[in-house]
Amino acid sequence: MVYIPNLHHDKQRLLALLTADLTSAQLDRIQGLFGIGATSRSPYPAEELFIEDKREWSNLSHADLMRAYPEQDPLLVIDSHTPHDGGIWYIEGFATADDVANGLAESLNTLYKIRMDIRDVVMQFVSYSVANTHISNDLWHVNVHIPIPDDFEQKTLFCSGSNHIRERYNDPTWVIATPDELEDSTTLEAVGSIIPRPEIVYRVKRDIARQAGLESKWMVASDAPNECELPDGTNLTFPPGSKVLQSEYDPDVAIPVYKRPIGSL
Image 1 (cartoon, rainbow, N blue to C red):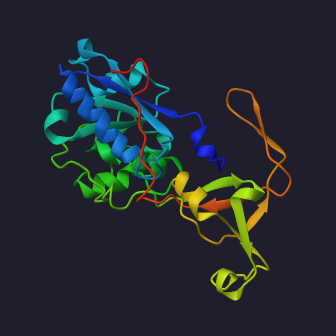
Image 2 (cartoon, rainbow, N blue to C red):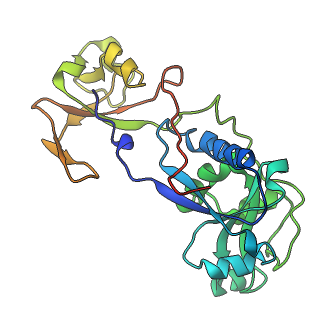
């Protein structure tokens, strides 16, 4: 079987505090919506939602919750409105002195937070983490403008507008394939679409790619390492001639797999 590193990565756990009485079915629905977003980039999500019961904190402000979990970025909050609007509060943290000086926030008590569609949490988390965008940009789309005030009412749920199912698996992945799983070509038809044009290209054989939920496309490849260490400490070895190549998931074949983390509501 083709080695797909995504299958073996530790997941990034995002913490959500439950501050309202919700039914088991409603909690299942929340996990399901999160899973739709988490598997939009890959059928094997890198993130998981851990819901912690904090219903006794329902009277606390978002600022109080953030102070209780100062290391959490983001801190997510599920409230009584979540089952009705499919939204969740995404809290990034308090503004800094530089933010205030630069006119981004009203004061040091300003919270960078936004209520968003649960399906968008993972996508926005990744975008914020790599600085593709800032939470203040998304707040502008829901009519909360800079400087972000200490207290504001968000009347519109932020939605990215993405179709997480129709547009899923846009992110490529890297795989390691052994010689018997690969085929190569030097024909103009195979190498012609790649710039700069390589001398040889490789692809995972169609039947093997399909079993792994991948598309079989000609790609430039590099030599694979002799072995790699798995998260459990064991080593996986590869025979000579194995290659590392970029691949794409086939949305018609790859089945998204999201599981509620153990211990989560």
